[in-house]
Amino acid sequence: ENLFESYCVDLYVSKLGMEPVYKSGRIYNAFHNIPKKLRHNLEYNGSPLTELFDLHCSFYTLSVGMILDKFENIKPEDLESFYDTCFSGKLYENLADEIGCTRDEAKEKLQGWRNCWRYGVLHFEKFGYSDVSGYMETNYPVLSNIYYNWEKRKNKYNKIVKNLQYDACVFETQIISKLAA
Image (cartoon, rainbow, N blue to C red; front, side, top):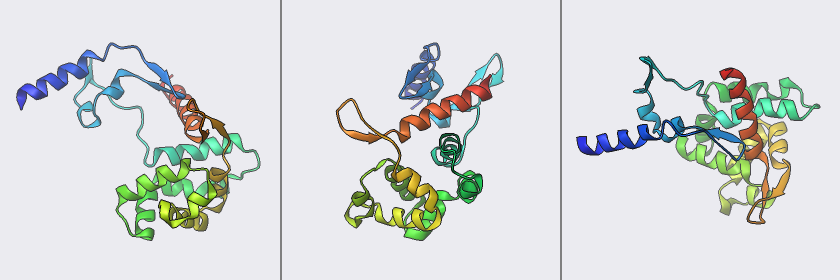
């Protein structure tokens, strides 16, 4: 067990000198190669390394700022309740309580739901998003409409996808760059 742990540490530490990579609108550095549970052990010149920030429900929390930047007609008060729920870390728990599943299952459903663009799939029970759609439309109708109608494009496989994930990665990189400056 100790030999395996030493091997893993050596593998991760050997990647720390690698240059950051810009991929899908986001900057990844060697820090991201190290499992989160091991990152607290890292130091630089005797000082612990820490993540710049770690947000609850980070995609959804950051998407509020992205939406306010992108859509001039959206009022901040239309998104305030959603932002507060995300920032407090309660979005996944609230959805889980509402639809009767675990927090992790709710998180997985919300992650898939946000990227789906076919309205029928989002509302047909067989695909597993109808309960999420109902929850979001009831509690956050303005946001649901924005997510449903996000700009689409053809990806490298010639499939139609939402730009939402890419746009969110670009926005996140811009925010982190400002914080790190």
